[in-house]
Amino acid sequence: MKEQAFHHALKIDNELCFGCTHCMTACPTGAIRVRDGKAKIYENRCIDCGVCLTACPAKAISVEQDDFQMIFNYKRRVALVPCVLLGQFDTDIDIRQITAALYELGFTDVYEVENGVDFLVDNIRDYMTENGDTKPLISSYCPAIVRLIQVKFPSLVQHLIKRKQPLDIAAIYYRKKLEDAGVEPNDIGIFYITPCAAKIAAIKSPVGEEHSSIDGVINMNFIFNKISWILKNNKNLDFSDIEASKIHHRSIRWPLTNGEIDRFEGRCLAIDEVHNAIEFLEKLENDEVTDIDFVEIRACDESCAGGILTVINRFIAVEGIKKRSKRQRESLMINPVENPILDEREYLHNKCIIHDIQPRSMMAIDEDINKAISKLEKVRRLMCYLPGTDCGMCGAPSCQSLAEDIAQRKAQMSYCVFVRTQMQNRGALSQERSVQLMRKIWGKNCFERDCTKRGAKNANK
Image (cartoon, rainbow, N blue to C red; front, side, top):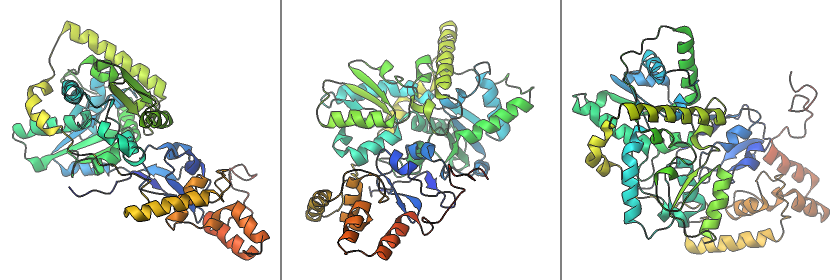
C-alpha cells in the first residue's frame, strides 16, 4: 500500500499568530518554527498531541472538525459516543438523557465507543500470547503515541500491537448491524465525537489502512455545548424507551489511565502525558527498561479525560467516569447481560487487524542514505559553532533543530543571533543584512513599537 501523508487536525491562524514562540518551545517533537513572524508546523514531525494549542496565548491554534450539517447527508446518522463525553456531565444526569439529546440534534442512532472494548480485550490477549517473544508490547490505543513512535522512536514500531481500537471496532460492528437490518450502505453515516486532535488525524489518515470506517468527526466541546443547551431548555426530554448500556463496567474505564493494564496479566505499566511518554520510550529504546510485558501509553495527562477538546476539569471527569463504572457494575450484578457485540467475534476478528505500521523517522533528513549520512555529519560540524543555549531567537526550538534545518537548506547559519553578532564583529555581515534576517524570522514589524502586545500598557484595549 502506498504510504499516505499524515493528515493534521491542528491549524494555525496567521491573522491571530504573532510569533511568540510559546508553541514552538512547548512542542514535544520540535515540530514548530517561527518564520516571517508566524508559527509554522513541520508536518513530518507533528503528532497532533495538541500541546501547542494549550500553550498558545493568542488562541491562534485550532482543531478542525467536519461541518455538523454533514450528518444530514445520510438517512441513518450514527453518533459514536466515547465515555469521556458522558463524563463531561454531572453524574446526576442519566446517560439516557444525553442519548435523547443527541437524537434531538438529528442523530438516528447512538452507540458507545467502549462497546468495542468488550470484544477487543480477548483479541489483544490472544495477540499477546502469539507475540510473547516481543517485549514489551505497546498499546496502539492512542494515535498520538502511535505517531510519536513512528516519527521519533521508529525502532519501537514492531512493539506496537497491530489491532484496531474500540473506536474502529464499534464503527465496524454498528455498520454491519445496520446493513444486516437492510439499510443501504450509502445511507449510513458514522460520526465520532472526539476529545482530541490526534483521533481526528487518525480517522482522516488511518495507520495501516487506506480508509477509515468512520465518515466524520465532531469536536467534543462543540457537541457538549449543544447537548447542555438541550438539557437546560428541555426539561421534559423523553428517554423512557432508550435501553440501558450493556457495556462491561471495566470497559467504561478503558479511556482512563490504567484502563488497559487492569485487563491484562503480567508486568504492565501505564504512562500518561506526552513528555512522560517520551522519557519512558527513550529508556525503552536504550534498553534501560526490561522485563515488561505490556505498556499502556497515552499522550494526554489523565489520558482521554485530559484531551484538548474536553470541557470540564480532567480530574472531575475521571471521578465521574469511575462513578459510572461502579454503578454499571452494580447494575450488571443485578441484571447480568452479555454485550451483543460479542456475537460478532469472528467477523470482527477478521476486520480488526492492522496490516502494517511503518516507521517514518523525523530524523531521516534525506531519502538517499549516503546523502543522509553526509547531512548528519554536517549537523555535527554545525553544532561545534552554535552556542547550545537553545534560546529560540533563530526561530527554531533548539540549536540542534537549527543545525538540522541548515543541513536541509531550510535555514541559514546567520539565523543564530550569536553567530550573526560574530559575523558583524568580523565585518562579514552588515548591520542592514542583520536587520533583514531578523525580519525574515520575526516579521517585518518586529522592531516596531507595539503597546498592544501581551504585557504592554494597552494589551487589553
